[in-house]
Length: 256
Image 1: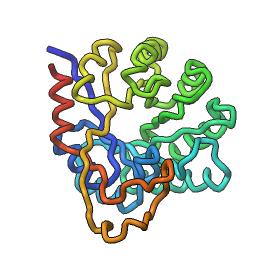
Image 2: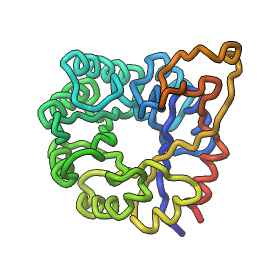
Image 3: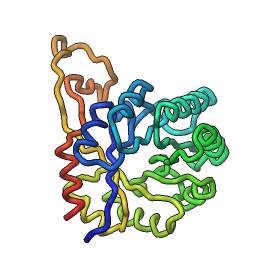
């Protein structure tokens, strides 16, 4: 019998979270603005999710897009958000702090851990994919292990976890049980089993989403409410939602 592999689903709203659990997810990571890599969700979203889910909820705390070297204003906001999310029921906090040179900001990470652990001593702590841009991943792991961080989310410093599989295998070996290595980025039902076999990981992180359309904005094609990419507006008549069938497909592939 194969060892149980934990499946964490990345979610961007309450419906995503409910559908992730319906599909069989073991845990979720709750965000807003997944298009931007994931930002802090609203308190209302956290409260709604906790009222409906029985599985653990990891909460992203990231106040803005555009990197991980934060101003004092950003940092103060993050501390307040993290405490508020814990009070709203978050089982874990997902975060990341870097210096301008891309190295882990040990001092700020330590202070943030102090703040959230003062609110809940056993809160699960997760350093997100900021680790994928550090100049030396092993130095970063040493810092995080020394501070007692529980987990890191990583694609192995590649565009996808599948491309970073060998690096993830080496990270897992280096960590040697001192910190959990959670791979994420591009994992799906078509590659997850081979990825697990190649790396030896005990958990995976994926989004498992489908596209849904909202035609309410189609009355005026000159208007864009968001930004532009290559001079073109991002499609605003569609959005992605967690698909329980896709969640279940990943779980079935894991079990093969």
